[in-house]
Length: 360
Image 1 (cartoon, rainbow, N blue to C red):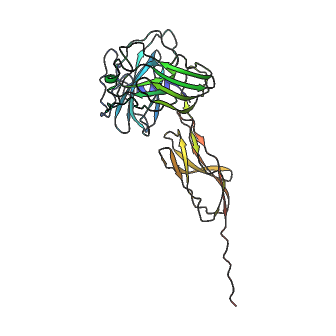
Image 2: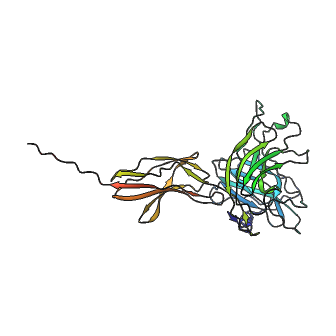
Image 3: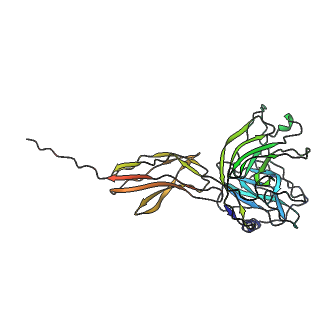
């Protein structure tokens, strides 16, 4: 999905306060409900989106962010390296109640695009990343969250340096794309500042991230120094690039709807089709809707309740004989591709009249 930097920066500027450049921002604790303003000021988004795109003003790079999920806990995330834009995501299953992000100036004599490192940067607001709780008893098999279409974000346990002097360094992420398979390695050369707290490894930060020609990719595997756990799976993403430097091409997660009954079902007038359970993937907060086709036009009947990646679809009573069709639709958003299910055909028939037998 293509987003215009100017529109998003302007939205953040509505709550703009003086940047904290040259001073450390005292971050809120995990129990606090509000983010510190950082460079953008505190931003209260419309509704409770699951994700927003934070884009640095011209001549600057994003260094990190704070996000308050609807649960009320503020979390600070440091970027492994600064970049022109980053996607801020809420805790899985929640929406964003408030966010802010920090940026630092870069050399304005050159254009810095995602995937390139700037030649010079000035220190921006200090962001103290929020760690995961201390792991007691300690285990070298601690797990981190699955990657998304824009980054792998790792919440390191608060006591990792007690067991790993010097902290964690290397992170590897494997991609398969229309341009081939590659592995991105992230390594902080400054051993005095290892990865710690909650650190986000944004794919567009990496110099091997394709500058052009990327249409789709799948995140297949990741390895994080400090744990024996390795994530393996398939996060499928699409990139609708328009080639314009005035827009940001945010990868979209591929939405899936599986298990919807695509057969032809016969039902009597006045009855309803039996409920159906489907499996959903990457539907965002836009919801899933049941549609009915009548007279060649698809009409939305209503929203379908979802729960942890599944949905139980119920159908209305059929009032008239005829042949109808049903489908599910998940709308496209800035961060998900959207999807339409297969079609179920419903043949509504009149109930057979009961025969009356004459008694002799």
